[in-house]
Length: 189
Image 1 (cartoon, one colour):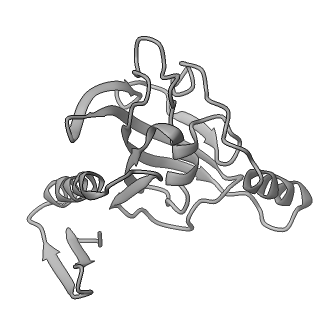
Image 2 (cartoon, rainbow, N blue to C red; image 1 turned 90 degrees about the vertical axis):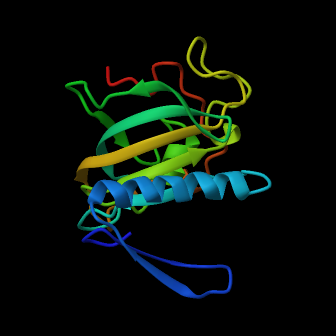
Image 3 (cartoon, rainbow, N blue to C red; image 1 turned 180 degrees about the horizontal axis):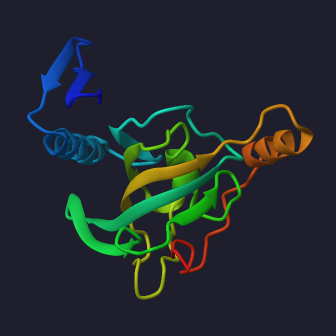
């Protein structure tokens, strides 16, 4: 995904292709479909699949950085988008999150790395990186694959070089699977 509704990709013979879209919406919709196709063509989804929709500007986020995010989450059903189970897009509050803190599902921690302010990304998250066999009562059935569209609205980067930040990054790297958040884990409240 490039500025001015332009996308480039390689095919399986490593040949470079470029596509110019009539509108940003057409480019974004195409990118979402590419991500879903990648998911449906993979024999086993064992890690987070992501596709940038809009790149954003500035420095990519890393563990320890604080973000404010607008998001929508769908259940992945019948090889495509199912029902929305959570969103803060039409709410007043953005989700505040410190990457690497273990307060959100592991798929978000991984899938949002490198995003930039103003960036939008599509995430497809397998159950082991989401709510697993437990699910979320009344909202996410057990063993559900989830799809999120996330947009980074604000970023507060951690200053490099101070001791406490080094600890937060190293503790993030050594984390066992993140604690599964309760059903309020994604609420803007």
